[in-house]
Length: 299
Length: 299
Image (cartoon, rainbow over all chains, first blue to last red; front, side, top):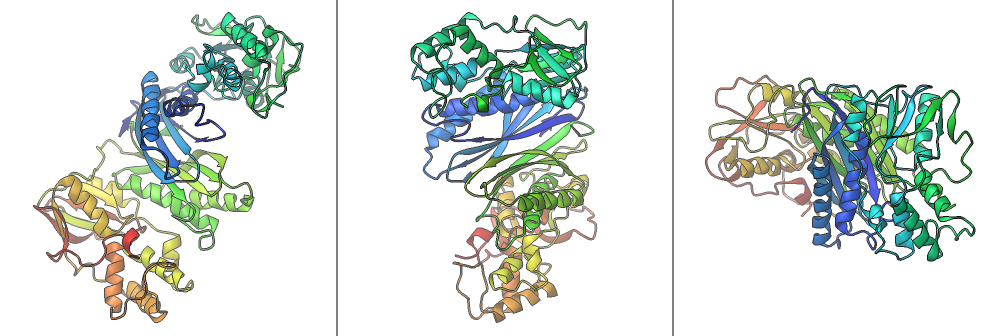
């Protein structure tokens, strides 16, 4: 039994598939559990709710080692603990590949859920959490650079769960977690709200950790998503590669929200743009020339 | 957003797999949706909760017809409506076979959940809903007798959802929905409660509809679960075949509950036995000589 003090519950269900969302040769079972939990818990937080519980259904081939399933459960439980939630149940079944169906439940604490559709012209756009780290991590892993500091960011994202209810309490008009990429996800908000979101590239300027990852990947001759992905693109600087990761890299599960003009935001929220009349997403007033989202990064 | 008036929520997740839980050549997509919903909603009702919502994640091959998915959604919605619930969300993914992960959420209306572990010696054992119809339906379908009245019972179970909260309000000490078979599921209650459950065969005597199905199946020369299942067992009467279905057939999702001595039960609850000191399940004081549960029916 779960207890949501005032009875307002949000719920979300997602699949996590071997080959698409994780690779067993890159991710330890604990990493997969962490990532599966983070994906669902961040989705809950992005509605302004506090994560309560996960239900996890695991389909797997009969030869899946028992230790793998045990470590998966450990990763799920550890990430739930970070979010103040717990694993409340689940199911198992046989399937040709490993497949997780994760349901997250969250408590709205008496508030209405924050949707994607409430952004209005004049609102500030702000983000909490890191951008581009998981994309940098994937590029580092693809280049065989496991020992680089950001490699782990692809395996174990660290969403700022409590920033979700915080944003709701601050009056956020719309919110989303960055799972596909900042430009792509803010595009969902812009579409649902019928507005234009214009980002300011200055506060998005990559920090030293992202620049160091870009330098390492470029030195290895691989910039983007591999294997089978993009050929190295000559002539781009570390800063350009890192900014592209920040704008289009998904799976960090940062929270991006819009706030009414004049809202006073705590330091972990960085204002990165403004909502205007129009449609779509621009950077410094212009359409971004690079790819917008994770799935298209290799194209 | 879901609203549970006092905030006590129960949740359950189950897989439904092509080949194991349904066959696309027997079940129309709407039937599969109905069955998937019924399985989850009955599990919620058996905790004494009123079903609130389902979240449904569908993995399917890329060549799955769009109409199939649409009819699946229709079946899910229709069965949810029967239970006073709705489909609140979901996810889709590609997989080699059709796989559903269904999460059910229920509202406890201020009560504690009814568990399997609360049965005590002296309690009455009662059942609401039909027994053996889905097993009869499977035998009829296996024999090619689609036009028989009970054939549809395998495709579209009709659990008595509101009997779950009713039993909780009447003080039920333990409850379960009959998904594996009456003997098998009451065995789970007996184990969890540390008691013996003794059934009375008289109130379990099969009604005319079950006897007619047994007669039709025996006339076709196939008694049990096929294909690949049991050879016909000569020498059993219609009544014996039908009683075996009632005792060991699963998937009707009748509700079986234990009530304190002296509880006054509405007519739809039929008293079928008594809780005693000991362990296991007996019929008329003796171990049942036939199989106990669905999965073993063909053995």
